[in-house]
Image (cartoon, rainbow over all chains, first blue to last red; front, side, top):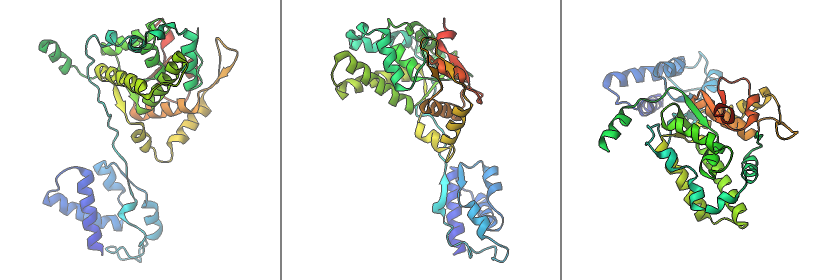
Length: 140
Length: 186
């Protein structure tokens, strides 16, 4: 039971670390996985900078005791890796790039070019639409 | 053509990141006669010239869609066909892409704050001062959507928040500086 869990944890680490697991790192992961049941994973998360949060961690603290053998998951049957919260890295959908020259001029009032009647709208009419998006305080 | 593209590719990202409020896009793209157009235009010119990195989230796209729908309905005094709205959303996407503006997924950004994103928004509203209107007798405080934009802006690590909304002057308790465009670009 424990062996299966440790193997799973090792695979999980390989996935979140996004790096090929060498024999050495596999071995270390295995050791650390055992340490996970003995002491905790905080140091591992800090050291690796993993984008994960163990929601079950408080539960582990509550349920684990010294009477439980360190290499078994006895006493914490409710713990599963499904309870691991994976926090996605914040990567922009569109990354920064230098602007193409002339873009600012090209797009000035571009919607007005599609709908020329827009030039008949007063400032107040447009402001009212903007205000209705959220409450707005606009100066004159 | 190729020669012009090469130095652009080699350019490094400017250090100052500015989160852009939806209204700046409305004033820039909708009507060149509006009193805020020249200020919005000058601000985007600075982005084009690499003075700032423009940053937005998908929350802005939703708000912009709402604004376009309202404006076109007002203009035609009838319901706006979604095709027209989609076309203008395409224009916005082109603009964002060509300006090199960073676009974040608001869902992903808020998901990095499990259980605290809306709490943080509540904190920001609590710390904000109410501002007396300059053209209306009302007092204004930032709303929930404003605060969520600020939480997103904080999370993605911008230095400034660009808006025309005077109500943002009352923001406290955040390191983000408010860039009131009507004052910054007189």
